[in-house]
Length: 300
Length: 285
Image (tube, rainbow over all chains, first blue to last red; front, side, top):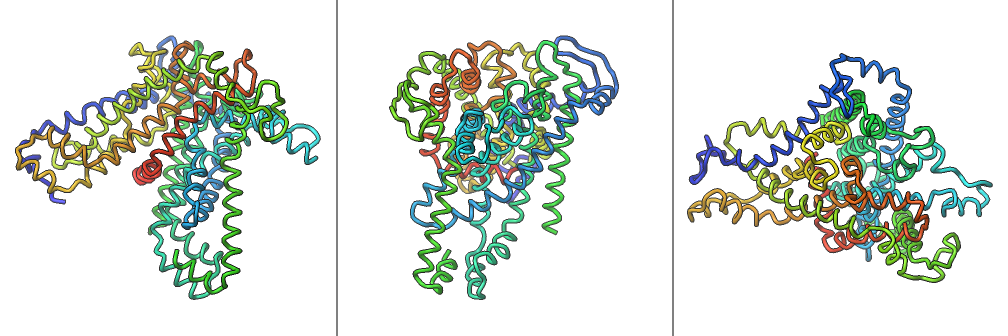
């Protein structure tokens, strides 16, 4: 592309016009993204509360976090969430994409149907699964009728099971979303590769492992990174399935859940919550850097 | 695709038919997994008042009465109106400001372009959840707590949308612009008459994603809104499910399905943009 120099490549162009065009967007970003981030860093070093300013306390909030069992439980829950959900969301949507890639009659209908959970809001999805997983819900009814269990499984009232239920919901809602990513990647795989492999006598499994998987590996890494970041952001699923407290004794709380509970409300400790927020940010950053590094290593 | 056909051809028609049957069987299984839970909720929403919600799969006395009853006994319509206000603001502001910002970023040769680009990309790294407390304090400082403007404003223009528009404008052929310049069009005219019409697809993507974002958002409205009169639909749905006065799964299901329906219609009508939006977003992250 030929770059006009000094902004004067084309006539009727004012030097200030790009700034004017960008002004609303930049203002929004500065006010609602950059400034809140800076403010979070500053607040995390104070003992501010929702209703009062607070004073500088150094790293006290971080020391408090490291000694806070609630923080460790929430962090463990978030990381566990990620470790379970990410492999599922890297593998299962790829299977779906392979399944719907081939143009057989009616395939468009299947593709759209698989995407429906993505369209539904987190609250709707939460309500749908709450109705299924309640102690008097359909899943328990089936399990009892099949005599797999004698008493209803407390999917929503036991902290561990609540976390597992939320994971199931997240995976279920993510299937169609990441399927589309893989469909885009599979579209770029030359069909000739498959023809050649077929002529060499490679079966479907062999073709999948030696052509499909290597071809979509960069996309798998992208899906892994994206789903890891969104796993660390989980809030609504747990809130809708398990209620405001986040499971009995708050045992299923994730980091965002804890941040909201600690930082907001009349007794909200904004200082401490900001420190927790920054720890969440660092955790997210660590996983996105890991993803980037894996991607780079893959390209090299 | 032809490769698959070639292999199958070797195994004969019988094997091909068996493979196809297996494929459809798997497809149907996946269909049950992905849409079964939604279908179950839908069927529950159709169950009559007198029947047992736990018995059987199909409603014994199918009725649409639950949809009427939930709208009568619960302020779902005002909540929907609130959501539509936020969504209308979000769609308009995102379309206008993301197009303008994306246009500026797609132009070359102005001072600070690199810096702006870096700052914008960097903000994509902050998860909302890690800045939501400060964001709340900012919105409170502006006196916007418990207002719909407070719900809308932080999402008035998203960086991702700016980037989508930038990519679209980069693809506009230079000749088009040069022709407009020869006609004596100034920059604003070129932007509105040449660039914006050439990026209709990207604008549709921005429109749909901002509408969906506003319609589906839960955590931020939950933080900003306190008075239930200002609730958006998603907050209303959650409180409907928690309301002890309701406690009727038929009504909750009807509310949930009513909230899903507009999204479904939008999706069915504009499918190609949905899939495209996801792909374009992916490249940018």
